[in-house]
Length: 68
Image (cartoon, rainbow, N blue to C red; front, top):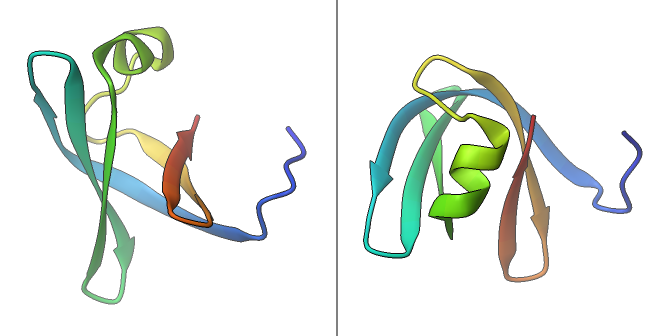
């Protein structure tokens, strides 16, 4: 997958916390750094995100996206 977002960080999901509409995803990108993203529960299901998954964190402007 090619994307225009240049700020890409590989990492491992350490937590998936579903809420009423959105879920909070925590991704360990190494060096003691964890990135937190808020995405819809539907996106979590579509991507089948789970603790331990290797993912890429994409940062563009004020949004934090996750691609798998």
